[in-house]
Length: 72
Image (cartoon, rainbow, N blue to C red; front, side, top):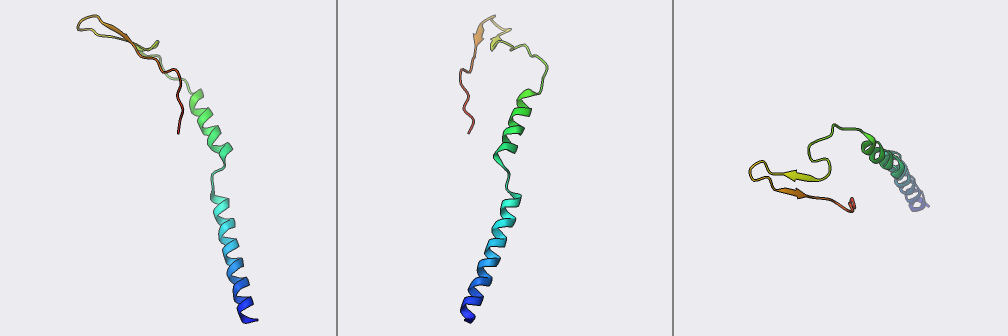
């Protein structure tokens, strides 16, 4: 009987620990919102607007374009 009471208490304490951990966990929709809000911020345009880079030394022009970006 004593073992059962001790086991139930240990189980209850373990469950309380899981509940506290879940309360502090970041939900996926919160992270998604941060990602969307950061993409919506406007910044000043730079000279490399179209992915081009012009060398002032010899006048060469290069283009660098990213087709797909997979975060993670």
